Length: 222
Image (cartoon, rainbow, N blue to C red; front, side, top):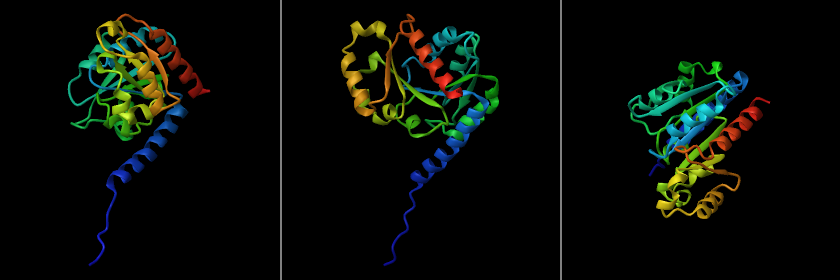
């Protein structure tokens, strides 16, 4: 009986996307545009955090935001309400963005006009972590109500990110959330990951996040 040829489609898709992402990264490097890929589950506080960061970074970096969702333009409108240039990307039902989808968004936004572009990826702890968007750095948000065990359950998200932002510290007293454990679990997945505790609602920790972004953008353009 003849052997059946097996084609590893998923591996091929990832390899093609990785190569495309590297090309996009090089293009952004030449433009001196720092692209930040922001990921989290729905409701973790991505948009609220971005609104706080926009105020903190005003006058320091020219900021543009790309909001990715399966549908609606709610998040892009929320950013424009605070004076931030923003566009909405609809993924057509897909739960992630890849490098080419990101490139299309950057083209519409006009990435060369910005020092910093933040991609608010689709709310999901699985698919977005699998696809390289061409970003210079990846950041993930974990909110206190989600629990401190998420790095154990969704390892790839924490392995691919350089910064973990633990949000909603203002409600720590109301949830069984262990700060030490979330740090230990995240470091278990990625020993090099940096961790900042913030409250996007009160503003606690936001200057530290802004400082991290400024430092990373400066290093990117150096």
